[in-house]
Image (cartoon, rainbow, N blue to C red; front, side):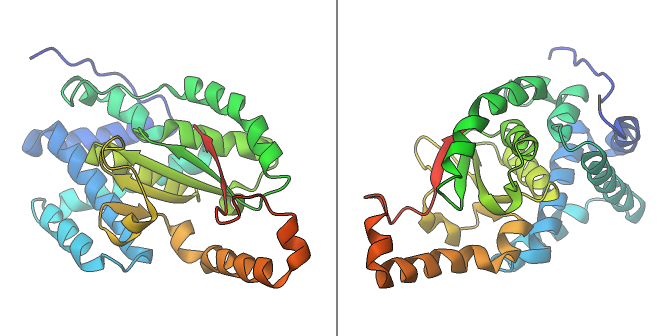
Length: 266
């Protein structure tokens, strides 16, 4: 086994998060603590707003938390609060991806190395102009990442959208997918905390890419902004009704009128 390199988490509240994390490691191990923290955090977010798979995710949460003492579970809650505080203070970062690398977890998890945020920010800046152009004619665009990791590229796009005066919370749908369960939920947690309207699927994007029918499967996690904004779903219905009842408007539609969004690949 290769020696793991540990460094400071370069983010607000990084030291406090690291201290809380390592306080749990002696009894449980790094990988178990990280996976359990991500699982519990994702389930807590999902079950607060999305009742489709409440029972499944509640059982997942309870099966995980029962391995910890009350004091340890409170330490997990403290870690979650620190993530919230860090992303609130500095939204233009990939906190969980940075923490994953800084805590030495990437050395033992399938050789995973997440995209550095500054690289993601550059890629987002390159893609923001096409998004601005599309939004001149569209109410909503989709930004997707089929190998999302902790969500670096999508987080960076959200921040670039703000710089371009785009209301990403209402005008951008973020669609993410990753083969790795933990990485996908890291992305889900961060997009949720940043107020992104997001769909995150856990699965192989090559053999099982996201399709609309997946919305009824527990491999799909919906962010609070997605589930709470009922007008997002109603908008599609209303636009279809308006199109059918307005012949003049119908002439102005593209041939692909059944597609409500354009896609910008991150």
